Image 1 (cartoon, rainbow, N blue to C red):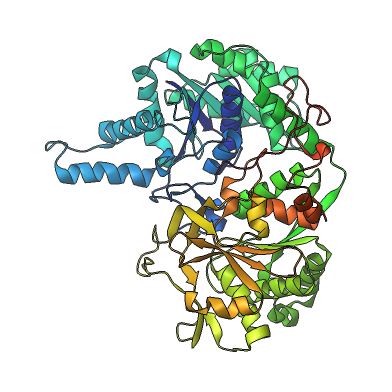
Image 2 (image 1 turned 180 degrees about the vertical axis):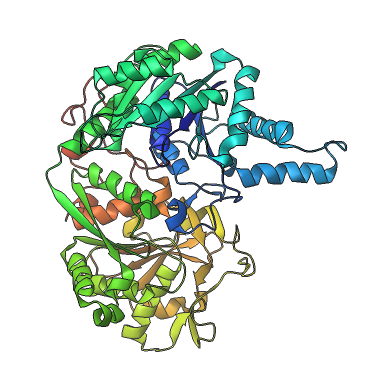
Length: 590
């Protein structure tokens, strides 16, 4: 097993996750089996109780693990399936050590950070690195480990010490360190400054780790003199200083690393069994990056949500939209709209903000309303959904069941005229509870009490648009994260008014997929399809939204769900042109 540790310096949020994912991508394109581990030094057990404004979105894995969004980057870049133990937190490590101490596993010894905590970290990494993450079940050959935070943080000290010991345990030829640092370029001088990187590397070396590669994040390509200066003061060869400047798309980062000889260096440094031959996977990646730069047609999607002030709150949603837009040769424009700005209270308090929000919504080609927790902004979401229904605008609602709640409430207001229709989350005393608590929901405890992870949805209608987009399959396995469900007793009321429940759980009790008759594309799903979207395999619900927004859905369905040649990726290993050797775009294997 080969281990690649990715650390960061100077500032957090520097792009370690993308660098780690890109390193894994270029190694996987060489035929290696790659896994990934993310270490978060916070004391929380997992990311499940975080506000999206704290660390961005909560990413959900197949086994129900609620983890950091960087694991979503790993899955998307490497096309792998991770589990909750691929995300290590300080809370998990201390919990496991304390549990052992309570059981008497340490035989009366004093339990300390060194060696007990550091040993637990090493054991966790070594055990998890051997778990297969590919469909073929083969044990990984390379494990990319990202250490969150910044070198020097007090929270990450036990992990740094653990890897200082770890490099000797697994031997030098099986371990290397990639350090990601910032090269600031002040506007006043325009000069690229190396001092922050020098100090960061000095601190890392003082803690016992010497970087093998220094990845420099900068706004413009690194000047030769600057690279030589970093090489001299940081005790590495100039070829070990890698420039990752700002690029048009994150899909270009693996290409940047490849062009600077990262594969060749890692092959020599870790003695990797790599054959230097044409790589079909990497050719498709290059083609995708090239395509993203030359798109001319635009499609705009209004994202109506509660956490729009921070784009990371909807990272997977944005990526799923990008994957689908890229697949149909359109450049994506996302219009972020705070759902509260669409409400009548905003019209009274801030009319300018209110009218700007509605202008964004009305000018978009399609509408996406993701889930959210709590009552704030609920009225605004309902207004957006109602507008999309009346104006025959493509609409996708996904995630938490309150989306289904809003769909149902709107139809109740407009079609059934039951003014008390509501959710038990917002009004526990409602006489007509459209949305109810799930039996397994524990209102007394927040963490890990939702319906989480991969669940099967059975299609009950052969004419469902979403079923056709999935390839006319009988069922799909998608990831869930919610606490409430549609009241099954009211199902027949909705269906009488044109709202079709076309997908249900395996017991036939929970409503999973909603479609509206006589509408260009009006779909609500209980699950989170964005978590399984991939750059070259977009998620079908998002793909349908983009097709409908671009006016291509009906022709796509009429052609048997086949794209035109110019919209598909090449299968030619020697060309990055989308005009040669076309094949159908592949969707997720189900």
